[in-house]
Amino acid sequence: MPDTLADLVTKRYGPETPGGADMPAEGPLAAILDRRTHRRYADRPVPEEMLDLLFACAFSASAKSDLQQASVVRVADPALRAEVAALIPGMPWIGTAPVFLVWCGDGRRIRRICELRGKPFANDHFDAAFNPTVDAALAMQTFILAAEAAGLGCCPISVIRNHAFRVGELLGLPEWVFPLAGLCVGWPAAEGYISMRVPPSVTVHTDRYDDDKLAAGIDAYDRRRDAIYSIPADKQRDPDRYGKAGFYGWSEDKARQVSHTEREDFGAFLRRQGYRLD
Ligand SMILES: Cc1cc2nc3c(=O)[nH]c(=O)nc-3n(C[C@H](O)[C@H](O)[C@H](O)COP(=O)(O)O)c2cc1C
Image (cartoon, rainbow, N blue to C red):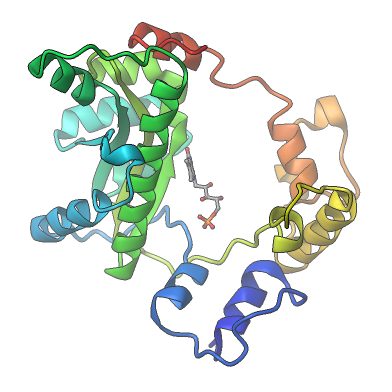
């Protein structure tokens, strides 16, 4: 059991990350440091009142200019859920989680409000797509942190965007509304694990962006992560294209992952929903 926040920081980032040595491992900071994604859930429903409360927490997130451009669609109909889950057979948790939500960027409401108030909406450019994206991400993450505080586990699902046109059709997403990510929610069936992160020495910059030490920082991170959990040899991506690596760390895995094009048509989907992306 971790005694101090520093113990949790070390679990997340490795030993050389300072901070929290004289603070007990409890309260909201401990919950954030200790958080993890859950993909397996107990066969136990999430009470409706709790969901309502979590939505209230989610939409308490900050919102750009108070425009509040996020929405969520709860997929409650079992047949509809099955259709969404069938699009992504490799992630069975989409079909099995007690609750499945789709968080959406929503540029529709403010446009409708402009109509209601007889004013032009004069922001037909990329930023008008970016702001609802940020709002939806903040609302989803706030929901996740609230759900985790209540003992629930969550798993965001961006892979639904691989099927954006179909998901849009199934959920009846109108013009200016787009899926950011799905979210599985339920009572965790297992403890799960803390996933190590790239350390602040790589992600936190002072005054000027500086990634001169990136290679060394990532190598050390790969080794630290591998010491906790080694990716099994049969899980190496694309051995036919890239061969079997002697040491297969996080960075090799992620570089191989993004060497494949994914979701190339999402821009086309956003344009279909009405957005200009320039
Ligand atoms: C926007 C977003 C989309 C994600 N999409 C998926 C997904 O499609 N499928 C999945 O199993 N996990 C998904 N995840 C979960 C990540 O894989 C997970 O957060 C990451 O591996 C770090 O693990 P941790 O949250 O336990 O620290 C997503 C997370 C985020 C924030």
